[in-house]
Length: 155
Length: 121
Image (cartoon, rainbow over all chains, first blue to last red; front, side, top):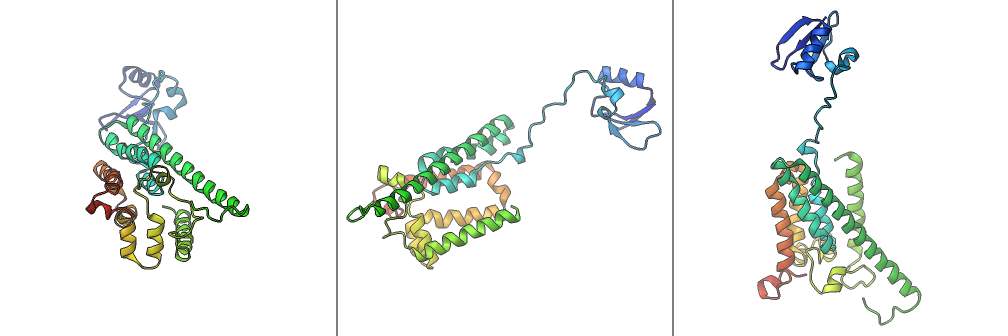
């Protein structure tokens, strides 16, 4: 025998497994419904009862999107990377970063995630190419100096 | 921000700070240039950062401000937001304001007419 807590927060039961399956089929309870087996002090979701969960017809829980607060906007990174003299690549990073929270606020979680992803991508490209260019310059300069070509040569 | 990250940032700030204290980037040829400036002749929003940081390391705030006013106004503000009002950075209008500031500054400092020429490094 089982007791359940309904969607209205009230307890129902005790009922037998047959009845509970019936309710499941009718949609009165679902996999997340809190269920207490008789003689058991603990409330657990229905899905934790193997014999009952088998009756949960392929009804996967709604795909949980990450909560809006967890989507990073990369705004600070984008601004820093732009200030480090990688302007052409930093600008899209900033634009995408600025889009993120507006989209999230409008309930467009997928769009927010997409902008977040693009902002991150542009940040890394700007950072990587910027760093590569600066390193290439220092190495180039060191080589030129090593070859003694540095006299009279100004960047 | 966790402890390791804070330590890492502190180390980077110290090393870069010490480096820029001893090396004046203006007359030095081996420091990498701004590629954007070299290729287009235009000033990007970050131009003057190295020289401004060098000036700052020597306590010359006015010189630093003249080289890159944006750096001196926006970066401290950004740092303060990051430390104490992080949720502000998640507000769309704050994000768009910052984005607009960077781009407006980048455009204005390239306008070759008097009040704007003060913005170029």
